[in-house]
Image (cartoon, rainbow, N blue to C red; front, side, top):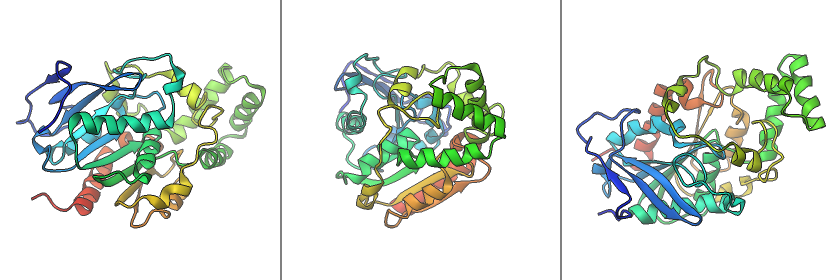
Length: 319
């Protein structure tokens, strides 16, 4: 029923366990893409061919699948696939920056579908992963049944404008430090990095320690070079290759049920998430109260419940 890359797959038998975010993969391995191999893990194998598979893209660029571990809870109903994008996590590292493009990373989704013979899919992505989910959905691929855009980067210009508003609400000295060092090109200065952390306490993860860190213990490392090359030194300063990125004019082309999720104090600001969702026919929006950008981490039960409810409505109750 599924076509896996022979000799590269490790299979496990945990089908009798209740679904949990810490559950080991039932299937794991590598898939060849342009430039190398990407690592993936799959839970809910018993549902393959019966229910749409959920493919989940991580943030960054240069993050890892570990931030998306709460999705594994949905494997009691759906096949759930998490993976590391080329160049980061468990996937092959590459020094070829020509592979570090939106087009390449969107293409990895099709490679996963082909390798695992996934006819019907739901795409979900958080932050930069939400970018990839949106880019994939606007292309209207065959078999796409729903999309989940979680705190997505839709427009770099809007993202930066929203975060300048958040910076305005920081103590005046903190905001001044941020703007001074960005203007002078000294974003590695200790004062700038301290101000960055103050921003993150308000708008990345508002809980200390951030609950999601437990999923990253002993996990694979991300790729900071990729993050800075494509984005920049911080979440709110983006001189990288994505500096002019904007998929918003094409959101109207999405023709599947779509859920937009963001936090009340998210870097992907609620007002913009609502506006972008309004460009997609039949979309719905969930705002996670008192959460920053780490929406899954800060209120995992609400997040998973909202996604489950959305999928049940979008795809129909389980037969």
